[in-house]
Amino acid sequence: MNELDFEEISKIFQDFFRIDTISHCDILKFEEDSIFLTEETVYIDKNLLDKNVYNNELSEIVKKLWGNHSILIWYLEPDTFRKNKFFILKTKIDPRFSKILGKLNKEIRRFKNGAYSDIRFEFEEV
Image (cartoon, rainbow, N blue to C red; front, side, top):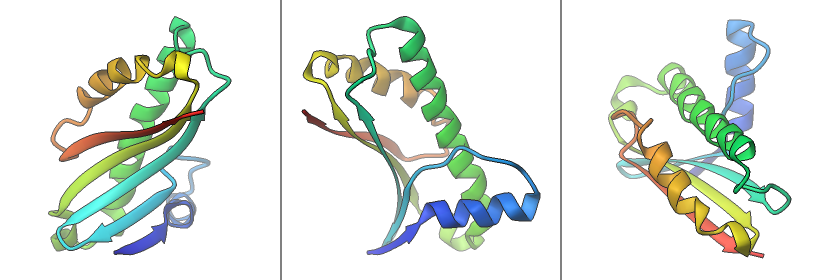
């Protein structure tokens, strides 16, 4: 599996298009017929039961989904782009909020719109 620093790729994208910032994930991995985009985050000090905090997190993840997609369209050769694409949210979370990840996962899936084959959550309670 090839692993690339998506941070560096997004910086090149931002410089090329002369934009200040674009939301993106941390890691890009290629495996045979699949592309994995992994966002690593921590939900320890964030109360996901608070509606405003929850909505902000949902919004940020959706921005990353589509920021990633924009960068991939620009970065990858067309043949490579036909691979299955998976967005993975890898997180550490306070056990009090672990149940809310199911709801977050369900809502995020509404925004994949065929651009992603699947959205996966990998979480560790701390």
